Image (cartoon, rainbow, N blue to C red):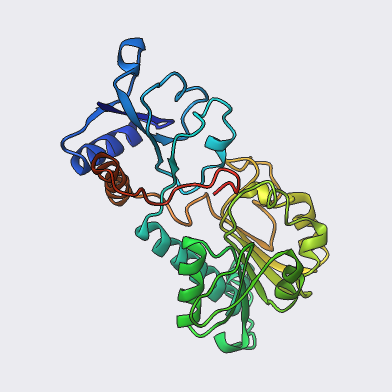
Length: 311
């Protein structure tokens, strides 16, 4: 049997991924292309933003392994074979990278480093009052693998961390809350909110004018999850009127972010080009290989997606 690698990669990305996958799975046959003669030989698909229909017509398919943490694009494809296990990428290296980015953003907001950067551009010398980590409450929204890693990193650095998720979760040192009824209280207590929620029907457009207004005046917002979760016009309005102090944004409704978008030049916005936690072909290939080996040996698969929940 063979493994189909279906991905929207640039030539350079193919040059990085194929050798990494081949090294992680030396006994497997990896195919970049498929035809009618090969379709019955494919029992596993390793995917990264595959074109719609790429997985249709594979009668022996037993596993779809995503190389990305988010699977909303796959679930939106009506040709995704029903009943075939779908696994998302949960890579410890990505979790640590996300935790580093969350800590950097929170620390920069706590110590007002983005304001100092603006002062430098204006050649203005002004020393601001120094706030400690212990005086800064951070809400981490989404307590999956990346959210947990971020929350724990913030706790270790002295922040008071409130965690919020759709379902109950327990994390050492984190005051956790769950369910829609508790969201207002969590946001209302936060000086900084960090979004790491999965993109689902419930979280698409979640951060609109109503929800952003739950944050205290002068709070800051960090989005490291999905751009579609934020109503960008509402966020801009909150920043323009001073209701929010600053926004650190790694993801956007349209990517790459259009050159004319107001986020680029807004004095209260820091833009990152979707780099908070990049997938490393070396570590991610090993994670994918572990699931492939589990399937071959009849063992339980890891990080399976609940299609009804969307993650």
